[in-house]
Image (tube, rainbow, N blue to C red; front, side):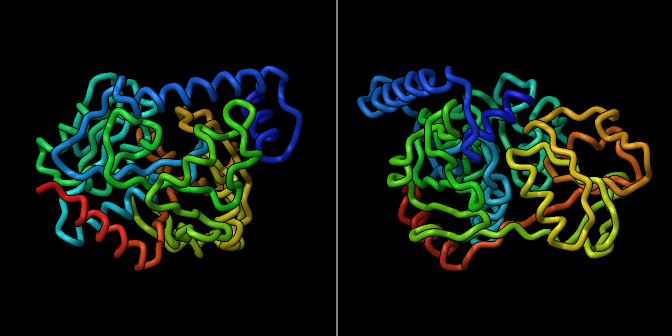
Length: 327
């Protein structure tokens, strides 16, 4: 965590970074440019599926709100007659081969984010070979694929690109990894179809998105309560996501007295991680809750969130998708 904290402070707070970050950043820039050129020249081949592909990703390392947006897209597509499926690398999971997730996937095997998406009823396939994993979705009857965190995965051809931007932290110092948080240069934004700003103030050309969570769900028996039930009460807040402070701030804004417990993104929780020697309620993100079901306690709660976007965005996406549909 110390190195991660040092890098985050340098990227977003202007604190000094280790000297080796700068030469490695230049080397990284060369590698990214060469890889992009190889795909553009056709020396590295892309795989095009027999259905439209929507890519959801971001330019920065860490979370920006891709999973809630992916769920919102899947819901909109289903409401308009499509049969969407989601393909993911399954980051944090142990599986190496392409796999279509069942109704109760193991987050240790599949990764936390695919399990959250699958719990919503959307078909999900995982695999490092994303075209092969995506083909499993087509074989299962899907007619549009959403690639979660696939902006830099050029092997899978795409029809629509969506970049999610953290509205609070934006792009930090705008440097490439590891001297900054960028996976690709800022010029990449000009080539995407939609830019979604999660929180903060959306800039010109960006679509505003807000994450709304008005209830909590018990891990043990799945009963639900309004989050206002905990207003004015002291609670433990646990988050192993790209930007834990976003989760903590959202709870504080709703009147909860929060004791914060940040963990590294995709952290594999053990019971000892959540032993706080008291009986105060423990609130966590859905992404973290799927990794804690096996040893959950009655006072542990997940906080589901839904992405709220303008109706104009959904109309524009559907119009763009209709134009890209395969004959």
